[in-house]
Length: 359
Length: 264
Image (cartoon, rainbow over all chains, first blue to last red; front, top):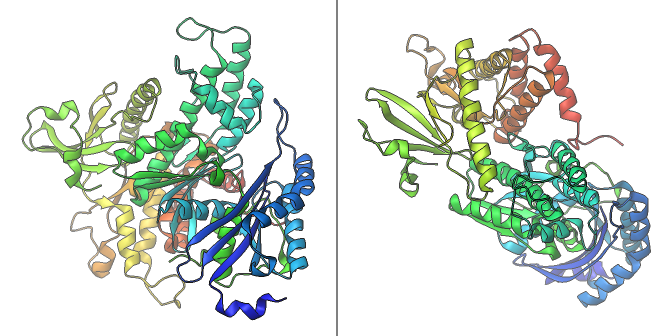
């Protein structure tokens, strides 16, 4: 209630963002300089729901986790940030896309904070959150964006006030392919299946197991690769030999899968870059924290006389700060989400968002 | 993209032999590099498509993809050429080293023609001005026809964009004089190029996905002309017998897995 009087002469705008579209619950606080727009991360707290090896995270269990931890994570984020409640301008939350039950749990949390503190709500597109955070952290001005996570695989470029999708996965997301492959190998989900695949792959490299390679224009497909990889895992467990006569190992499988799917991602990204005439590429999303993918992308970008921008797990993997950042950008242009419209949606395309804050 | 960049890349070995004119780099696409050369015959310009190995890719995967793609591309081009689909003719190739020499297509990309046309038009948001869109609509129809002809022969392009189509200039007699210079930018025969991702298939599904790739590329490259894309599909519909069922499939493809916004 006190905020309305002080708003006129504020030096900085502050937003609290709540994210929970998948198995990560994140709350973060960000400040934007009112003059320059420069973003400062005040806090970034995350708690991940980890399911046992061989299983994935189910919506109901994930939602229960988010509900159980929301207050804890939010309190921690607020105390880490060292700001008082009166300084906060708005509460941002993930409107979608994502899993329904976890999304609604976190939205309920965000609504509660907004009502409790008398703040305005801003619903944020999860993908736009990733892109804006990536741009802010890396300083990439107008890159082609590869957004790769457990739920999304998109090649995006900005044009005329929208993030336009040039290419995407036609079936499952690349992260979903990796996650489910980890289940086939019964690799631990802690801290993340993709991370453990990456570590195992470092021990591979002796052979390359032949897997399908499915690129269609700027789109790609991962379900056939997953099926084939799962078949080979079964054969591997039965003692199948590789081309060099030695038994195929889980490390060989992880290596081959990574080499194949990442080559596809780099290829579609390169095609989009050639198409729009850009030589900057930004990788965001959980899979974007994979160092091998960053390396391959860097090699491609260097050949084109450009460079790759990537962030680490703090900003790549789902977090509250990216929601706060993208939400605050929208808030500063006058965007609000009235309480009665503060819904969630599992399907919310990146190109549906009108990007008023960019030219 | 410009020809001035040619010094940055070592020439493919085939182009290091003497020729009547030095080769020039025309484009560095994602797929590879395209040179204009007279290495085959002094009076005959041709395009050399070269797929250099990609350092980011595992060498085994790289060799497998390069060889398979050059061979497949040549095969498909040859098939189209024999069936009368407007594509460049294949002159020579060496799949293992990753090059293919094909007919040189005069003209410029459709993308450029469209942009030049749109550049002179008011934006979509502007109040509707009575304007003759016929030359543009005609181009849309020629695109639909070319893609329809391609699909009729059982070939899927795999990367249909307006950059992968050329406008081959008409003979002066064919060119319309009364519609003025503005119409000139969208004149010419549509020639399909870059079959690097082409496959052979006659299934509705594959054809529909091919169209979908074009539809999306068109919408993202020429957002202001998106509404006129229907003319492409309309003329496609009449290009071959099974086209109507492909268009029905296209609706499925649009909805499927695409996280298209859905109500509720």
